[in-house]
Image 1 (cartoon, rainbow, N blue to C red):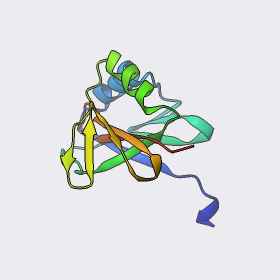
Image 2 (cartoon, rainbow, N blue to C red):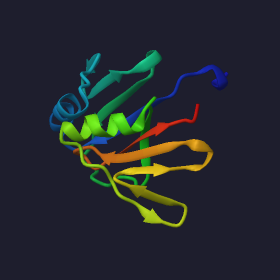
Image 3 (cartoon, one colour):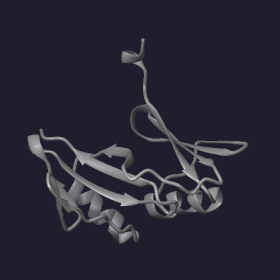
Image 4 (tube, helix red, strand yellow):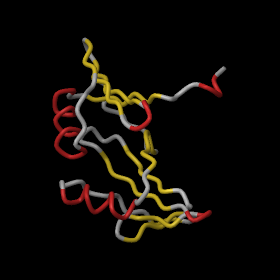
Length: 127
């Protein structure tokens, strides 16, 4: 059943070549599989995400994918060094300071947008 299934996210890209370059340069990720019309990336424990071409330039105003990390502060610093800009939020229930939000339960999170306007998050769970 689905409780035993891994989840894979697909992110839209108006310029697939540009997106591939951005993920390589900024995040250090290279596709593990290229098919006609899509690039697939593999990260920890066999989890995957993909980029697919679309002429639709509308993007969700929400987190479309998130990486679970051990140290969000270190990840933010490392990605900033590669030129990634982090989002700043200040509204009820969510405020970032230097790009990082302290969340309930001891969690921390940060968000950035890729070159296609997709919102990507990083979350560090407590403990």
